[in-house]
Image 1: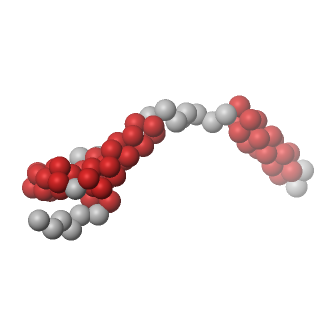
Image 2: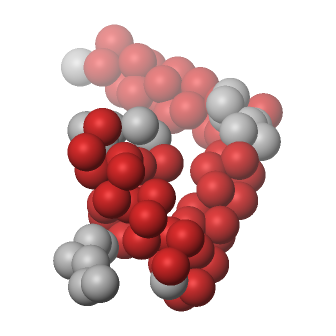
Image 3: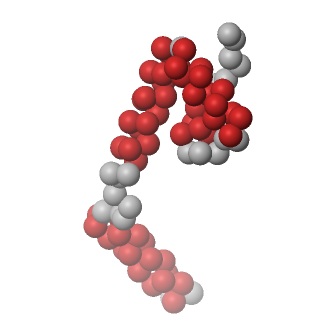
Length: 79
């Protein structure tokens, strides 16, 4: 059986953005195609890794932004 799915379809499936019919067809594809299964497993691993990315800036980034803000406000007040 030939499937016309793309990696984008797997990504949509991963994030539950597919229809019920697409879900069934993609599950069948993954169960029959080792390359599709491997790609899907990589996507799952990558999605889980995203949960560990820090969601706040480093102190260095904050310092750079605050310094820039101070410099800009001083330059504007002298105009």
